[in-house]
Amino acid sequence: MKEWMLQPLLDPVILNQRYDGIDLFLHPECCNGGVSNGTNVGVLLNLMSRVGAVDKILLRMQKCVASPQDFLVLLRTLSAAVTLCATLGKDIRDKMLKIDTDKNEEERRMCEDRETTADAQGEQGGSCDCSTFGGRGGSGCNTASTRTKHCVAFLDDILEQCSTPTL
Image (cartoon, rainbow, N blue to C red):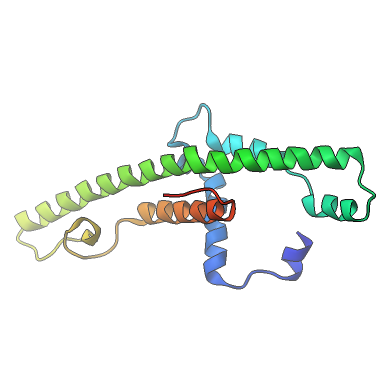
């Protein structure tokens, strides 16, 4: 935390990635599809609560002053990290992609309805950005889908750093 305060991030791309990661925990429905039982966000928070100050433990180990408790904390941290990567690799990413697919389908239907209404009224072009679905361009209606895609990209970056295979 001290390092973050002394050297804050200034790159907007990295800041937006961090915001997307925080968004996962502020909007749990993004991760669990709105299901209240067995939330994956709760699993992640539980796993992260077991993470200790690895940098301090490693420093004490280098100085040969580590206590047995340090080894236990390091063991819990590494165990949580492995489980965390496995959880991110399987459950959350798959659910987020499913949510994204469902939202894209819903947005495609909405865009088609708007285009049909516009065609029936004799208007030129629709009022929705359906270029993703092969429709006509206009003002964007896929912000939820874009947010989900950013969350998936953020998870892919984390999984890549953990050497976990991604699709």
